[in-house]
Image 1 (cartoon, rainbow, N blue to C red):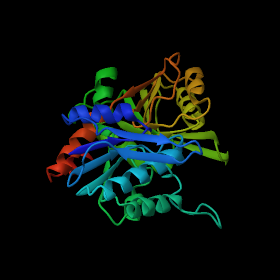
Image 2 (image 1 turned 90 degrees about the vertical axis):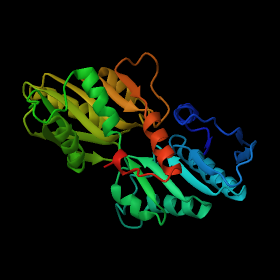
Image 3 (image 1 turned 90 degrees about the horizontal axis):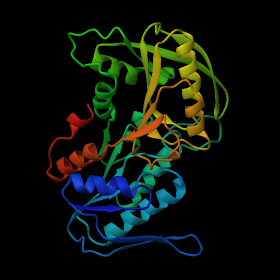
Length: 317
């Protein structure tokens, strides 16, 4: 096994390598004066099982281009198999035509990765599960649910014993599309679910309209895959508290947190926002309500199983 990283999230890549009892392949991933990306591996990877760790997060296009070039470099260096490890899969929200004369960019990115030479994709909590079908190569879509469940038990003190009815906890989906995710969390803790019904008047803005479900006198936990501007999240939290919840916190896989999202969270009624380290921490140190949990052990174990030709399904089923 050989592990390579670009510039998107080297800290996570290093932690994954440590979990696999490996070291990162020395590589020079830099930028020319005109902005072109340059890649050079300083170690022989001929015949090796290569894993390239790179989230396609901000700057999205630079991160994606780096990943494509690293895959091509590995292929031309005679790697036996190339797995693109993409903890956060950028462009996943563009998975269908939202209007006339618009692209399906997630499919385009899938084509680019396959054409560059990737043999396998390892990612986590794709925004839309059907994106797996955009690829003609194997895709393992891991879930952060197990990682979050451990943190919830430690932080909140609830248990996942199905014999215990968690009447005091309700898992909330911020929109109708995330109901399945909320239900899976609720099943783990034998809890209830609720749904925030919202209307989005224009891109990047949201207005919470209604809350479906009972949260009064309960501790609410919002679960979602992406937090970007933070508007939907903060409005949902306010709607939940307005309905009599005792507290509200959020567990969201990918912390894109663009612009002033961290400041919005700080000023909101949220007790805390917990995200994974799939994306480099984007919040200033004075943001006390936001924290990260590591998914390095999850990815490290998945990569070990892929290398040893073992089943990976138990990590995301």
